[in-house]
Length: 253
Image 1: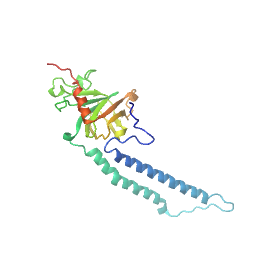
Image 2: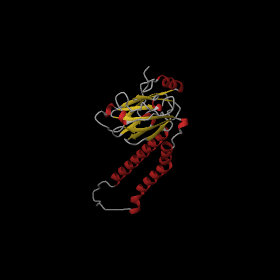
Image 3: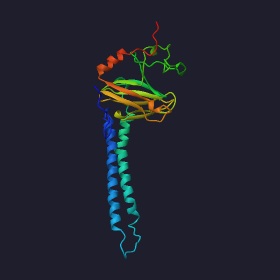
Image 4: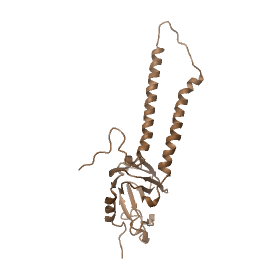
């Protein structure tokens, strides 16, 4: 059965815990801009009618005072400051600064490169193995060190992020080459991935299903091909999927 589209005439479906907070900000800005557009339209129409050309009436410059010129600017400034201090800063702090603790979340690593997303799971031991750029090749895309015991059970997927619904997912985002941008519209996540930096990102999915990962940064000739999928499973389905995965490194005795 084909999955229904996550997109319609408005914003995509809200599939994370903080998506509705971001939607509130987007909606209130659109309503405010529409209200300003209507008010300015009424004002300009009134002025065009009131001061239209009339025979025998000379044009004269008339000004109501400097203060009246600043009234619209002051009203807009007060609105924007109110929006920043009562909505934007608290929401930014809650979404970007309050990362859930590792014990209550699924912890991953996401590595971007031209033109793919590699997802690194720590494996049954819960420890991420050591990586070495010198070991990167076609069969070891993250350069996992086979001599590190913690790396032997690590799982790596390419362009597939599997997570459970209802549990926070925390990952460090980085890039091998150029600047990319991890973008999942349904989760309201867009975060740049930069070489040499590990940027923490988190979200909690509220809806099972399949969602597309896009790159929101023009990253090269094959930018349009750089896409992946997020599969949000029930907790039982996720555990079953995880148990079926084989370690990324060849197993030796």
